[in-house]
Amino acid sequence: MHGKYYPNNDSTGGMPYIASVIKKLKNQYPDSLLIDIGDTVYNPPHDKQHHFKPMIKIMNTLKYDLAATGNHEYQYGVNTLINEYVKQANFKVLNSNILDKSTNKLPDGILPYVILNKNGINIAFISVCTTELATDANPQVGKDTIKIPITEVLKELIPKVRAQSNIVILLAHEGINKIKQILTNNPDIASNIDVVFAGHDHDYTPDPIIIKTNLKGFEHKTYIVEMGAYTKHLGFSQIKYDKKQNKVLDFTLKPFEINSKTIQADPEIKQIIEQYFNNPKENINTLNPWLNPSLNPLSVS
Image (cartoon, rainbow, N blue to C red; front, side, top):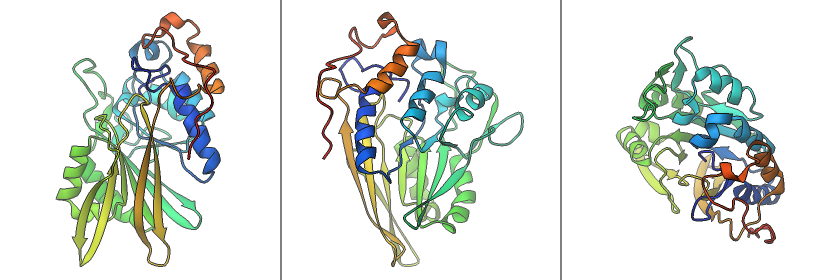
């Protein structure tokens, strides 16, 4: 999401607009899970002043269920991540391969995976993050962490989690090409992951990428999807699972385009943003941050 509190220059995205779609979908599908794949923040003019505070309030209001950490969650150091984000979250924050250098353990409150039960089906969520936390612009990011290669941690965790779960979902804040490479080179890992929600490289996959493995005569499909960045799209996914066969039969994805010209801003989220950024001049994305407030709410079919 990268702290996109307002729409982008092309009128796409913006937290009040994506919130309208989220609320509509959660109302229609009350058993659904709301998930973020990392980099919730890092829109420098806004985050420099407030860090995680506006976004965590928005995410708690929208009742997120899970969030992976991205490289920018470590932007302000592990202690800030723990105190301003993890401890304030009313949802579970996941990551398995970025450790706190001061303890050699995961930062306080972050879980490597979680297993949720929905309608008698155990669904496991494992999270990994790119180990390239530092950038040319921010070479100090990640200095207070220990970074474990993704393949290494998945080889350790996947068998343990698969034994307890019917469905395994990987929340991967890493580029799709790297994830594809890991799965292709490690069929033992791929054959035990059903779906990958990817992030980091801002790729957009309106149609799932499928990795096929065949171990011991059993064909397995791993579906990979990514919804770009900057709140331009929201992905709505559905998994068809057969309890008798203990098998995922199908995975479907419906991306929703977020356009502030055709979607009404959610007043609750708009109000939160205005509490932090009550001067429109602070908004660098557009001269008119709240577009078309009289539009009808989005109709989700």
